[in-house]
Image (tube, rainbow over all chains, first blue to last red; front, side, top):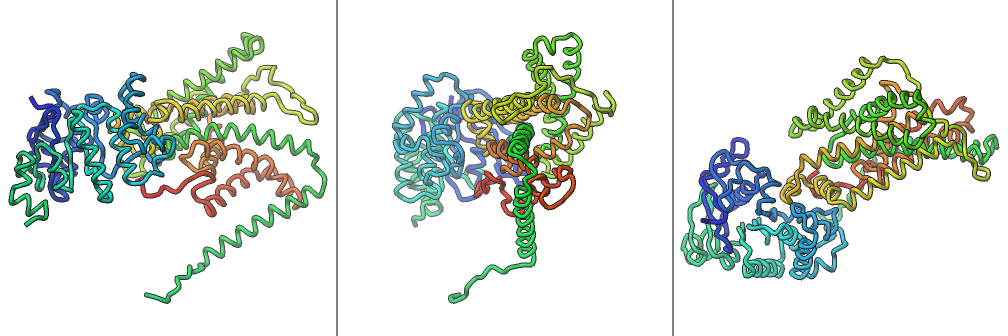
Length: 237
Length: 354
């Protein structure tokens, strides 16, 4: 059984039919990527998994447990953490407070302190700036904070929404290195990316989304070689 | 296009604002100088004014915290907050009277005052939490004007509920004998009730500040204030945090209610109106949404209201300047809104969605 299953999910923004029967699965330890153009429904899919948007139809399950009926904070408690699009760190909280809020669902102070150290090992920059307000961090540092904050919940599945958006190329590489490292350490990741080339390089499998529907599902390698994908998303003719 | 200098056009409004500002500053300066030069008031008078202002301001600050906490999280002015304050004070009146009749009020004054505060806090909290649940939560997604009007309606509802239950008359709030009289320190003398008010308010504010800064719930409150959706993604139950915010603000108002009733020796169904509006003014003065701002704004308003009338107006030959203290308080609000719309400690809400 897949760790995260999304089965025939339909979701709406008002009258706009944003997801028209999306199905996908993520297995334990995998990186799965969702690629597609703007407005294809990638972020909407993540929002629906996190419970910010309620699907009108379809099922979402984590290790067989239904998530559709849960409220967003319960979904986090069950083990799904999201790094939202555009980073969205709490700018008026300090770096350390952001990370502490990330561990809000947990109550064992010792394990939390250990994970805090681990995040600081992963992102030494954050440790240097632990008492600074997050609003003073650069875009790249904020993205690292957003990822670290989500890791503090010790998620079973990490949802990453456009982690490379708006970052300089060097920082994009740094972020993808972190994603690969998390993968090696066994974190299960569902990655939404505009940068399809990068995403398909780190992912095990991928789904191509078009106007709210999955039009292609394959291993990342096959997708990378697929003519249509190359033309439409990788900018290679 | 090169070579074009963009000069800010000076409009009639700007001129009117400058003239108003200049006139007010002239009045304040001329008035203050001639008041001080007249020598009618001694240092002791000014100390009295300052201490009274500090005591009043502490009460405003406590109430203002309720406005600012709720605004910080919901971007909504809870105009029924004055009535949250009133309901606590009014309910504690009945306990105060029975404590007085049993002799407990004077035999064990400290315990009595703590009991009064506990009851007042409990009542205020219950009222505020019910308000949130019944009147505001169903309107969370409505346009911003809707909960505002609802709040005004809730305010009237509470006022006239208390009026219906207990009548419109003023009721004398019993005072423990220990609060009669004054303490002198050198040339200074301070009314005992003012000492109680200032110390109790300061203690509550320190507790609140530490709660918001240090505790898990306080951090969650700040996270929710910044972005509810992202806070939910951290596993924070946003609805619960909102209820806690209303409750915490109401506890402050509950304490303020007892302090106010002890200071003025009376309660009435309408007693929440003016302190409520003043505290709202204080919250705006300090920068609404900002916790230290509300404390500072309250104390500042109390001081201006107490010292201002005599200092600014007495020297100008205006009779009974104290009658104008509300005019001075609200002029402060207008001035701040004109010259510093974000308040003393307020920050511009840059970039982030409000």
